[in-house]
Length: 382
Image 1 (cartoon, rainbow, N blue to C red):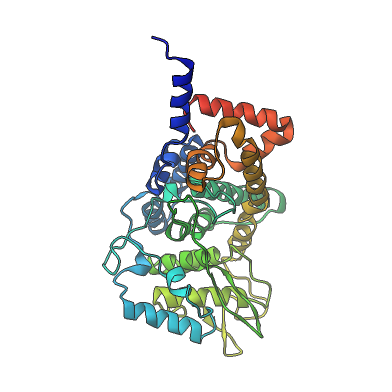
Image 2: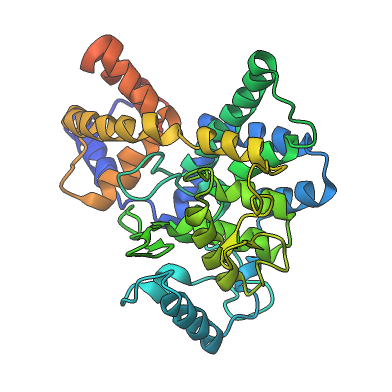
């Protein structure tokens, strides 16, 4: 029996006004995303190709074990947290403030025990915070897969064109991009309205310079330290946000010091830092003039490969503006943040990605993008 037109319209409106997906459904959105599935397959292949058994086992556990333990938070009580905060502030590696404790120690399942867990699956996490690159469910695997591919491509080019010898560094080049952003699954936890929490900065600043960077970078280093990953990998991982300049390792030194305090390890004894001739700390292998550290090439490659955001940040800005402009065509109410974000924005971006949305509009205008959205609508994506 054919439904009357008014009843059909009423059902359509009711579906559009149905309660939005809960934050827990980020896993379902990511699981239904062909982009995320392909990215996870790429990451799995990268891990399978690693030769160092320690690096391989730890990376596989961190990315693909849903019950993985957050090592730097194991058996961490309130007194331990307070001691870490006090030391970071005292050593000028963090700014005191009301948000510092929450930014350092987001709530975790199993809090205070031997095996606290991530608050969300790695596969469902965003690649950036609110309004930033890959800020949709499943964006983190996509971002990591892109940076990992960039690292391999840079390494291949340096080998083929410049004749650079990278023997023994393939695992460092492959693993560093995966560990660098891993802590985003720890920090960027979906809110019911589809938004994300603020990210604090760590690293310190003062008269000697500004070394602040996103907490995900420092906490990722702390996790690698707590898992006792090789010192060379930890140092290469630290190169993500900026490679050290010759004779100016201060930025990385600050980051590694902060991470070591959080991981409760001695950075010198573990081989992440070394005493300099001036009596301060520096990076291993840079203690003598003219010395080239064994990890140097992998460090520079990692610093270059961590630049997917240069393209992806404006892509998200454009995609958000375009999707909002087209929302009325599909009966989507942008005035309801939760319904708009979970039922439309996240659903679309998890399937197309911001860069694809941007390129569709660049090549064919709004009509081309609207056609792609119509296809997604027909498939029940939103």
